[in-house]
Every structure is written in C-alpha cells, then in structure tokens.
Length: 329
Image (cartoon, rainbow, N blue to C red; front, side, top):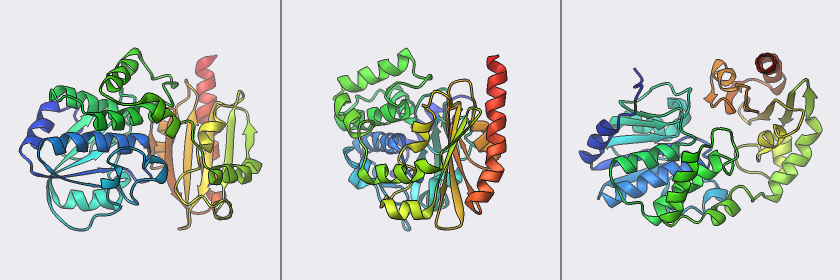
C-alpha cells in the first residue's frame, strides 16, 4: 500500500543501515531523472556507501555535462544490494532492465517520485505528488538528513528543477520552487550554465526531425498532433529516444489545448507523448493507456502501428480537450 506521507525516517534508517546501494531512474532519462539520481548519489558517497548507479542506455549526450554523470552505468547484470533507490519512476516498468534486476537483488526498495500516477511499488515511499520535480524531494530529504549541500549535488538538483519546470515557467512553479533554486545556487549551482545546456540547446538532428515531422501536424478543435515515423528518425540522424521537444513546442500554439506526438519505434510499438495547458489533464489519459505522468505532461507506449495508435488515442484526447473546455465555460 502506498504511503500517503513521505517516509523520511524509514528511508533514512534504511540507508544508514546499508552499505551496498543501487540507484536507478527511468528509461529515456530527462534532466530530473539524471539530476535526482546524481544528487542522491553525491550524498550516499559522502556517507561512505558503496554506490552503483544504472539507467538503461546510460546518460543521453545532452545531459553528460552534469558533474558525475559518467559514473552512471548503461546496464547492470551482477551484484546484490542492501537497498535500491528508484528515483523519478512512476512504476516498475519505467525503471527498465536496471530496475528489474535491482528489485530482484536488493533487500529493500525505496521509491522516490513526484508523479501522481505512481503505483506505490517498493518498501519505503518518498512520494510527493505536489513536488514539481523529483529533485525537489531529494532536496527535502537531504534537508531532513541535515546534510550540507555540496556543489556537485546542488548542480545536479538544479538541473532537474530547471528542466522539469521548463525554466520555472509551468503553472506548478511556486515561491518555494524559487526558494529551493536560490539555495541550490548559493551552494554552488550555476543557473545560467544549466539553462544554456538544457533549455537553450538543440541539435541539428532534432531540427531535421522537426522539419520532417511538421508536415504531419494537424489541428482539430484545440487538439494538435503529429507523427514521427522510423524513416523520419533514420533520415534525421537522431539516435536517441524522444521527439526532440516537439510535443512541448506544439502545445505552445495559441490554438492548442492539448498536444500529442506519436513516434514509431522499431519493435512494432508507438511511443505517445502528451502535453497540456493548465486546466487540461493528460495524466489520466496516459494512465488509462498503461502509461503515466503529470496533468500537463505524460506519456505511454502502445503495441501496434501508428495508424492503430492514432485511432485509439485521438478520440480519448478529444475527450480531454472537451472536458477541459467545459470546466472553463
């Protein structure tokens, strides 16, 4: 059963009594996944723990600037652990092969996450759905432990805070979010450098993917959607997961309430990403399709073709738009 309150003391005691600790985060990691993992890893190392960190596929090139990221393994298939800490992962599947191995070879599992759709896996829960990022929860946990933030940990945590709030622009950003950012900066995190390496950075391959995908964009009564084929990915040369930020760009259109991007995967699956403006809830949509996320940002993966995915998802997405509009009227 999922704990309704963060189990700070239980987590602290479990870590204090452990020597070998595994930290993992979700597949296709973003800034919050990398930042929360590295922030926690920095603390654990300072306490003399033997720390192994792994994420399926390793760290994406665009996040390799975060100090300590080279210590994250792209896979794990050996070893046993006293504690595994899963960060920023709403369900077991999101932790990938690294998480599956870790759960089978760890005595206890700590689930640290901020997604409202978290399934409550693990033995100890640090789940705070009101947090804007998993890095906020790590920050609060380190404060609970009375640990003085080190520059590398502050750098990692601010990276997660910046990326998950889109540069403090989402509606969930509060005065406390900015207070945490200020404390991380005071501990040595360079805000301008992090901004330049995340929000203000795009590769030519991403631009090439957008150029091909934009021809598929359609707008229908507040719902804007696009599709990315395997040929689009091949021709653009984008060799990493995701859509290069296209779904986030599409929802900024004045006429858009909800955006959806379908991306064809090589294994007869389709990755579906959702974004929404305040007042519209795509988390419940993703959850109904076996995925998860936040009200304004979520996703899922569906078996089958692009055509089948569109036929299944678009009517549900239209319902989300209509439901949001009815609440606004």
